[in-house]
Amino acid sequence: MTQLENHQLAKSQNPSIGVVGAGQMGHGIAHVMLRAGHHVILLDTSQSFVQAGAKRIIKGLARDVEKARLTDEQRLQAHVYFGASAHAPVIGPNASSPFMSFTTL
Image 1 (tube, helix red, strand yellow):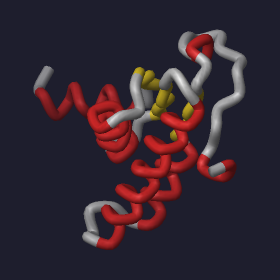
Image 2: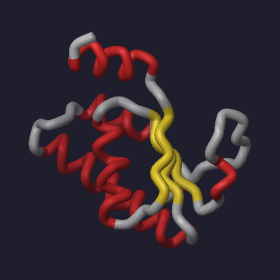
Image 3: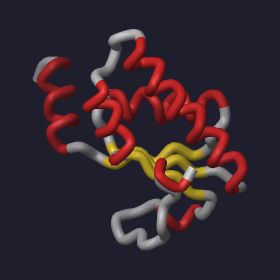
Image 4: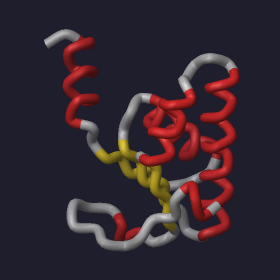
């Protein structure tokens, strides 16, 4: 399987990715994964860290639209695919904890 085929397979299955840590590296990884079309859960130890990381992601996605790296439709889709929490039990296939969404920021 070629690298392109691997990428297309991963994107078509649209896996959820958990990123632990909302700091510089964590929010950057989450941002890149959202741009690639994946569902992302951003986790950190406190709600204030989670909110700060989520705000940086929102700002980054808006900047991507301004620089024509994303369409506005792709930015809005990334918002739908994004969840954030300060509660670690949200990781896993049977997670039931609510996520902080873009609309609650």
